[in-house]
Length: 202
Image (cartoon, rainbow, N blue to C red; front, side, top):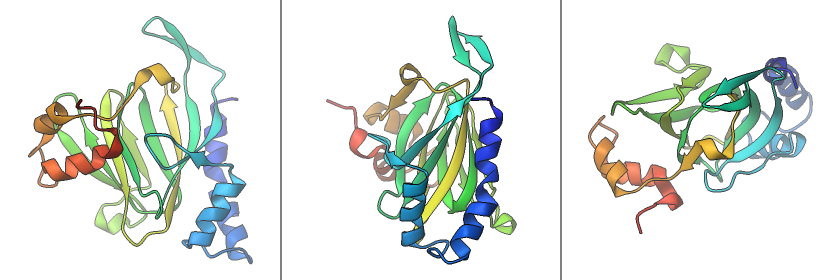
């Protein structure tokens, strides 16, 4: 598929919401989350958690570290009240998330130089939320749905394309020690929570 497929995925936001308001489950409800999972054919993402649905990849290709890769790949990604955390992982690709419906979602980003950021994907612009969060390649990240929120549906563009050999899931005590105290929220206990079941210490 062409890179424009990603824009088409995002452009479904208004008609999808309108369909829900025209007699389907209410936007923001658990029933609406289940409807989106079924309509978009989302499946549980192993290890990272949440729900994933593949959209496509761009026709254009680029040489990256000796490999021919598509310039971009696109997916739907969803967190729900049942699966509210996208556990800590590292990606080689730039990863841009666009909110389609629901939220907000907190993003915890851990960079190679040791600094950390927290950004919130959402539509409350007056309080600093933004409908797009762009995570640079080579960073760790974890996502957490706000408490009391039923779901957040996103469209993600990864550049260059996602490949399984360019992702690392989980970390251990050395990683926790490195980032502990880098921000007020970056306590050892909270960082351990973001790693979740993918703790790598033997």
